[in-house]
Image (cartoon, rainbow over all chains, first blue to last red; front, side, top):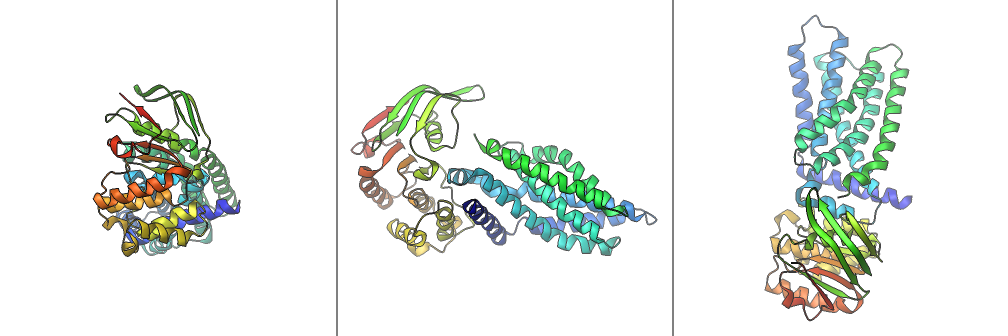
Length: 213
Length: 194
């Protein structure tokens, strides 16, 4: 078990180092989410409620995550680098977990900027929204990483990932919006935690079959 | 070490390997030859564990940690330096005395001076040398090499000749090449695809 987590750490560190060098995913996510807020700010009528704005916050977060996920396996897809990782004697689910950790890190960075920006453009975010975002990040990373790996081996990957990801992200939007707008968000946060658990187990167990040729 | 019976591989409707039988004993050196698209690379990918056969049986008496694979791509991250790439693989293979082993290989393959340069700045020949370092890093028992001389200059090819000759007595080899004459003295058996 210790060896498994050592492998995850090594692989996640590699992904973070690659992003630090290339800087092509996080800046794009940041620009996208801010641009989305600016667009929504002008698109929403001035008398719109906070509830509508909270809904748009979650739409923006899910599409920002989608942008990050489309880049998740770019390094491995180019020049078949995934082969190099598959050859290594580590459990193949460690590749999924490490990539998921990197995706969570990128989403967290995007949200550190996005949530205060949302407060400026619309209204403040409360603790339940932040808790919802943290739980949503885990679920998005769990299922999104698996789907990104599936899409990365397809020729129509740019089309395939949104088609696969958006339907399974609907519960994240439902849970996130619910946690953001109701007085007692516990039920929705519990729903997001359940989503995380179910999809993490499914993705962990099925990753090996997704990447096997 | 490798035994295949009736090995087949299809990609959709395209049949790449059909009912292939082969045996490579421990310490053997199988030279695989044939024209482009004849199935050499597919066979090597299956033996390295990168692809699964669609038919037949394959037994390999070595786990993933004991296989060194060199394919058409160098399998190194362009944004990482030569040292960082080998360190990544060294950690994943849990290579003992990793730093010393990496240093020794970089020195041997003439890459020590550029160890801190990003792989993206390397020529194709240098990438092939780095890929050879990667494939040999964990001291594999079974070496699966697909066109190992690809892109190497005269000096690099001579270096690889010496390396393969020194490893030959204690390793098992499965090598695909378009230049069988070069490796013929080392080979114990030959498989020619039509």
